[in-house]
Structures are given as C-alpha cells and as structure tokens.
Image (cartoon, rainbow, N blue to C red):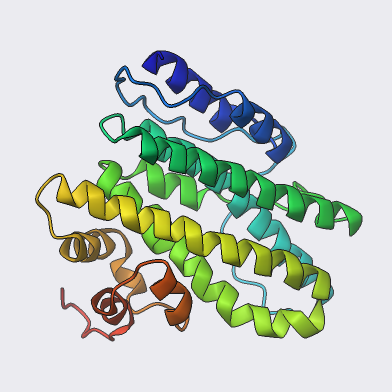
Length: 266
C-alpha cells in the first residue's frame, strides 16, 4: 500500500466540510500502508461549509444551561468540537509514519466514532432549528494541534489534555443536563462514554511513543502541559477522576493537574 495514497486520503477527510462528508471520506481511506511517508504540513483550516463564520473572541455569555438558547449553543459548540476531533485523529495518523499499523487503525476508528458523534448532534440540532453553522465557530483545537512540534506533543495536547478536559466538563454537566434536557443528556452521555476510550487510546500511544525514545511518559506529559497550558493550571473544572482513571491517567498526573501553584513557579 502506498504511503502517498494514505496521506491523500486523510487530507481529503480533513478537507471534507461536514460530518456526512467526513464519514464518506473515511469509508474509502485505504488500509494503513506499509510503505513510509513524510508527514505533510497540515492545512491552516480544516474543511467546513462555506457559510460557517469564524468566531471573534468576546466576553462569555452569562446564561446557564437552564436557558434554552444557551443549551443549544452549548450543543453547537460540542458539535464543532466533535467535527474537529475527526480532523485531529486524521492529523495524528499523518504525524506518525514510524508507528505500527495498530496506531493508525486506532486513529481511523476514533475518527469514525467522532464523525458519528457529530452526526448525532447535527440531527438533534436540526430538529431544534439550530443547525450547525448558525453560530460562529472557533478553531482553537485545530490551532493547538498545528502548533505541536511532533506526534508526542500532539498526543499530550489533544487527547490527554484537551479531550480529557472534555471529560471533566461532561462529568460535571451531565447530572444537571439529565433533568433539564433528557434528549441532549442521552447524546452527551453516549459521547462521554466513547471519549473515555479515545483518551485511553491517546494515553496508550503516548506511552508507546515515549518508550520508543527512552522518555518518562509522566515527565513528558508534565513538560508539554507546562509549555502549552501553564496559565490553565490547576484546571478550571473539578477533575473527572473516575473517567480519567479509566482513560489511563496516573495518580501523579492527576495530582499535577489539580495542585495549585505559586504564581511564577515552574
């Protein structure tokens, strides 16, 4: 199997504009190749429909989830995160030509599940007359992945930090969402359960990547988080310790994320 054909197929997934289009592009990605390839530069932006507008940062809205339009905006934001997660899984596979085929099969499986999540949310939002694209979107997750120097950093930044933060948020919100919006709760609960597995895949391959370079994975995790997210330590949400433990986080890593730091300290 040609590495070049595999690269072209994954770039087509990233360029596809919608969850339906990304799922269709994933369906024709060839099996992970035997021949090597050079990681290509990632596009400045993944594909999105022409009517999507990029967000300009403003102050946060102060409404809670009890406010119906706020709940729909929350679901729109999650939809875009899930759509971006398809792109991020493809990007991780592109960045790891030296890793075994099992790594690439894992990334393709994650991308497929993320596309399914986006489709579930799209169906719910369209039924509520809040279709994707009716609010502006940001590309912070994609920009964070593009800023990574190598696959090891990407495996920390994307699944082990940003997606794991999603576990924290979901675990905190799901009990409240159950009473407010059972339909939305069912979708987010489904996504949450799958995301534990996705973060676990990131944990497993981060450790394998570190082992191949003689690095301590906990020390590498802490170094990368300090580099990219120092201003967010400790996190703004209670840690989902149960979900993170299932996803492979060690007690040392969770203590690192939750321990207050003296301003200016490393």
